Image (cartoon, rainbow, N blue to C red):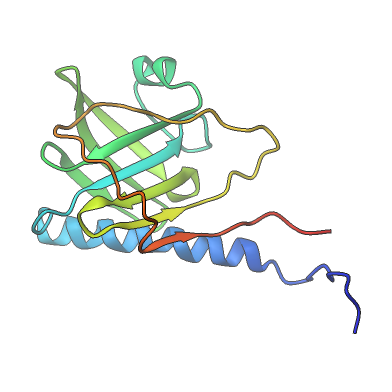
Length: 159
């Protein structure tokens, strides 16, 4: 057997990433159907603001030129979930905004109520700056640092 890694002709990394992003869509779809969040559940969703298909107000894209995190918790409206994106109404500094976010733009999803998190690797060579919270909901809870129930997938290829 050889110690060298063989490049796969099957794009496993893309398939896994797409499947994990579908988890986000399914969870949001359940929230859309039920009309609200159950119990103490709430979500931090981090996404690339300049990704194709992202549609956010200009004042938000100027404030967050690379990446931002939104909170789906107390004050959100008109959640619409489709197969490739979701749309949601949120308020930022008392200004209502409609956001359209494709699942492909998402880099992180956290539900701190149950210590669940998904992280997606950025496909570009540039290192992103840490996302700043958009402060659209209060209170802001911090996810557990112990890493319980966190799924992290490294999509870099070893050559």
